[in-house]
Length: 230
Image 1: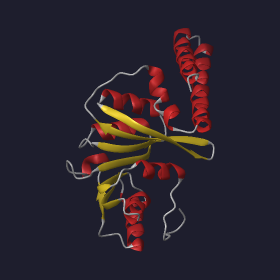
Image 2: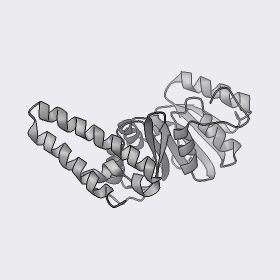
Image 3: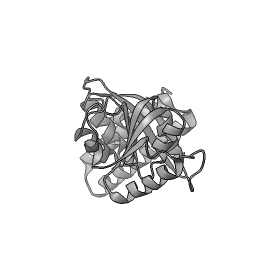
């Protein structure tokens, strides 16, 4: 988004985050930056109120200017806090955490009031986030891909069920990408993941680490086999 507009235009990954958020009363945006996402959610009537939280003062100052320009200062509460610690238990119907690494998102979910519904947009290490979610009792309901330039990002809507699972390693790399996205985009995402695995395999092989190389090769081959069903 450039400047404050009547209709807030989100980046593709934030647009996908917006689309996966269900309507409700209060939404919390963790790591809000300019507060574009919660502002759009309020303006479109998807939520009545929002909490925009960040760990640093600078992003909250940016957010404050956005809200003042849009006349939303009374509907979106700004919080200076790490992760979910600025929220009270049950305060938000849904939480979104976008633009952070998968491992950081996992640590945020671990260290704060547990959300029943969350939309998560990891920039990296999405397989580690998926593994964490399975082991902590979250179910991935939907997973949407968003392309920005050469990068393809994934956005996950998850719900806490308390049912712990331990999926196979290949499933943590695949998630629901093949089920929930257009084939061309899903294949492009998987192609990049397989290329990364091949690079890791080659690196270990060059270093004489045959066991580690074999593990990456087996994972890549398992993903390729699963992919044939779609």
